[in-house]
Length: 205
Image 1 (cartoon, rainbow, N blue to C red):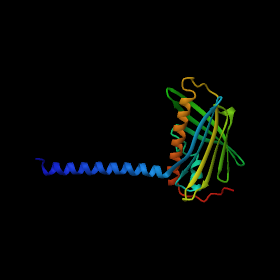
Image 2 (cartoon, rainbow, N blue to C red):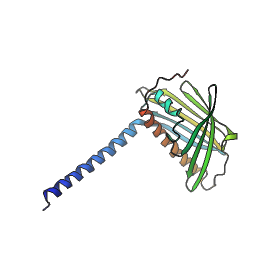
Image 3 (tube, rainbow, N blue to C red):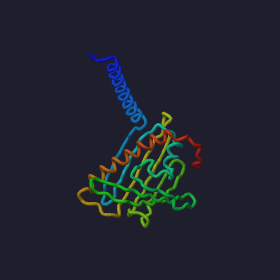
Image 4 (cartoon, rainbow, N blue to C red):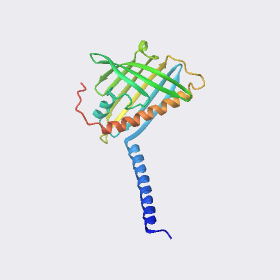
């Protein structure tokens, strides 16, 4: 027969286990509520990869824009980003240099991506600077709008043409799979980071 102390310890362990399970369920529910994927397409045409994604997050437009234009914390949205810095500002154009350590299957590479970023109202356009990047051409575009539930609806589009060798074994399928994983992770991180961001009053004129 178990002693009273052993019985209390068993009850405590059982209660702790139920608490952990409940917390995991709540975390899963909060993530599902915070991110609502509408569409995600990744295609390859020649050497270029195209990503199109629309999704919703439980954060305001100002909060989302604040996170997307935050260059001070390089890995806030993507843990593979090792460094990000503003190179110059000319009028509405901000030149941003990003260093990424990316891996797909067994292939890893340090990548430099330099972009001329323009923010107009609730749209961010970033054109790749080929001479300062490991890409021949491409652009990113984020468009953010208010949704009916006080959240935001986000549209993301990107075209990237690498200027570095990708082994044929991982080209195509594995790169598309990697891009899918990356953009989903970025979208989830954007949702969680934006929800914690103080809602600023931004001048987006």
